[in-house]
Image (tube, rainbow, N blue to C red; front, side, top):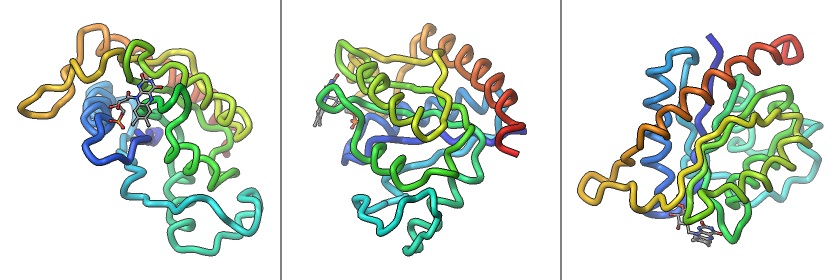
Length: 188
Ligand SMILES: Cc1cc2nc3c(=O)[nH]c(=O)nc-3n(C[C@H](O)[C@H](O)[C@H](O)COP(=O)(O)O)c2cc1C
């Protein structure tokens, strides 16, 4: 079974990203075609990138960097659960991407994005440029959640997905599995 990493791109206190990612993990596990892990960039806790050498050389100096390398190397496909900040990529996600190169290569990725009217899609478009450089293949199928705050339950803090969100997630996982399979010979 391929390993799927669901990455929480927001590291803010009180982030909406956590309940949305928990919903995404739950749907991925129900979908049952991946071995799914939650990757929380708040826990990964990478400092702002300031490394001596280009990550493609894999000359990692800190333990945090080595751990991040091992985490990403062990995953076959990703779902980035992301907000948009000022119409762009969340800073913790840019940072986490920049830290590695080889470990990202030939992996498929999908997005669950959220925000106001845009549903975070401007951040998705912007992030795709970086993914292409890292030889990550971003797929078209996605979940976009506009006006996300209205879908957060006030009492429990959980994300209340609509039927469309659930359907879009299932379609996204199906297609992500196809691409993950197709890219397997390149990862080998
Ligand atoms: C610095 C900052 C910039 C933001 N820019 C946008 C934006 O461009 N588009 C948008 O839809 N929402 C924007 N928002 C609102 C976010 O969608 C909202 O705060 C959301 O909860 C952020 O996700 P998070 O809670 O997981 O961090 C912004 C919020 C912050 C803190």
